[in-house]
Length: 538
Image (cartoon, rainbow, N blue to C red; front, side, top):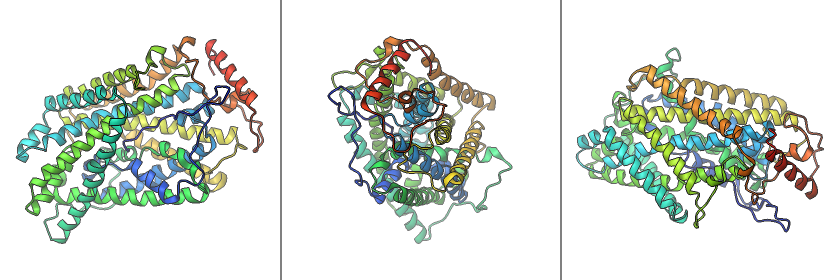
């Protein structure tokens, strides 16, 4: 998953005070530009070591996940984004199909996925900091120390949080620089060094193995399930599809081009790590840094491995700085419709929502404390990754459900892009995508055999309880909402079923070219406020 989050954009208002959507000019995003957007929203080097444990089999997993997840999910998100063009993103998609209770839940789960992502990237940041020093034996011991990792993770996160109170401008600059020097440059160098290493006939550590894995031992393929989270983020970039001049023709091309680039970069980067580190010695947190050390050392420039650690550490700081406020922005925009207390919706003079950031920080701090109950830093890293994958895939399944229901309830709705293949294409894409997501979700509950996770009961228990609690939280919050929570200054464009005066699950009677009048929209918005105030659940 890329280090991006969705935001509900601010829009200017009409004379009546209603917010209207301002879109980028039609045709402003070319096929190549869209492919680049997809690539940048997906690629990340942090997860390469987990797949390097599979050697050449990692290529199979990358291809498999691209076919059963990235491709179908991209097509579904593109259709939903081009059909429901008002602000809200996945909140609007799911609410149009199932009502705001589940739209709010989907939006919350996206936020929660990022919360689970934070401990993993913070642990990786702590390992990167350790590898700035000499010698490597000291680096390895320091990076494996749970107390060191906990302290560094907390310092990085809370420093970024308090810094964000000053506004997003500096964080955005750090994010841009961090992406350049912490991901793009290290990623390019990794592949160039790996190619040179091969050309100079250096010893190759890749263990010979068949291309296809042994599916009879599920515990050996659990780590591969994390690839689905690597490929996450399409629900974010698909909102730009209406800015393409011919999305029906160009968006599928952009997807295929992006998939080729993503799979090639991930596969090559993974194989380079396997070139220089024996499979049994691969560590989920440290092996990327160890690989840089080994590659540079093979050319007599070992000290540059420590320089790469500085680059990667800077990239982590940039990612965390930018993403501390990102999830809160999208969550607050939806919460203003009445899903969080008004005290949680306040912003400071710099436009930053401090209450949600404090709650977010408490979540991250508590989750990071899992370091103290698991045997190793590596196992804590893996359990956070698996929980993030499960939460994200639950949200993905909700989006697939919304796609299928909206095809049935609003068949005449104008769609700027439609999943190719007609009704058959719809079912092929949905069945393949749902089956892939369910498979990865189930696998994510199983302890991986490649790393020490301690007691399987404790490991699985943490995942089951954690996922259960965090999925239930938005439903509890929704049931406890109060009329006073709604921000009277927030104008959210009503859902189609509200304008039509029907329930979400009832079929629309609109014709393909129907557009509601301003009066109908205002009436629907007023009615939605009344329904919320009287606590009528949709």
